[in-house]
Image (cartoon, rainbow, N blue to C red; front, side, top):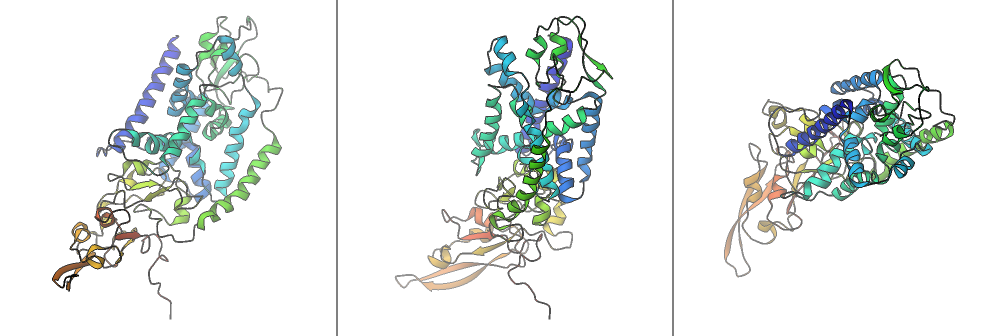
Length: 494
């Protein structure tokens, strides 16, 4: 192994461990000021997608330009040296693929259907331009974080199952297992971020050059290639991951990585079809409004759609959320989960609060702190709680189900919800009554009632309610701060 390959392996290991460590510390609730979102702020796919959907570029995502500049200088070094999902695929391929050199050479060759990633990129960006942001579904960083947060961490000791976690974990597992058959298949054929970086890599100042003189056509370079860019034949610079395996394996010394190396001739067969590109774009234009309308659409208020505190209004929220699951990881009570049906088809895998599984800590602002795109605004504790003098941020309102409440329906004393209510004064107050039981004996009861003017919808009352299965007090999204029309009573002018 040459020194260049050793350095690359060290870089790959470092960034993979860094990504996993940051995500694990986020789940552990580490209070230190760690750069949890650094990887996502460097993601140009997130930057382009959010800009197209929301019409604005969130400030932190400007760092994605740095990765584009790096790609123009050195090629797709992010894919070969940094991307944690790419490194995991590479590792799985090495561990699970004991092939002969002839077999490896056959599966490692470029295939025309690898252009699928470009069609996927076009469809995602056209959909974003139509205000339907779905880049996070296949963005490698979001895919890895979501798979770990929803599918892997819950299986560890002390973990709790996440609704739909099997799907997120299954997708990540499928990406890794596919590398058993074709090395880094997701990178080669399906990764939209790789396709985007490949566009800029065509203009790379540093690139692979093969001098024709002295080449014995031994095919060792093609055997070692990570990205199927055919270093021996029609070198495709947009497919090159800059792993430099080809330069290390070339026994003739004719393949080199050089500044301003002459570009290889264009491939004899085009990689892309205009018809397919046009079809991808038109398909996205048709699908975008269908996704927005499916499952109730954006404008329909739904009781179970409880967004994190600081979440933007639903249309703006969906135009920024990249489904990365960082807010879910950061939630200290485990209240945030990926939406399965609560937010319609377009909002699949976006975060929702499930009070029966956890509650929104009254002064906690972690979800907004780690959101990389501003879909959840960063709040201070004083702003969220209303201690700054303005009304507190509300994510919903609690309602008492009199048919299930112990003091109301069963003549059984219980004041758990009132005790748990964190607002001051408490949004849940008790109405004292004395009524006879079935034997005529008087029973003193304290029946809970909710003051909607004070309730913030944190959900701790629902979470701690002792009534099994469906709680006797439940939170609805009505009254949420982010939607002035989602009210119990809407005032009519005049």
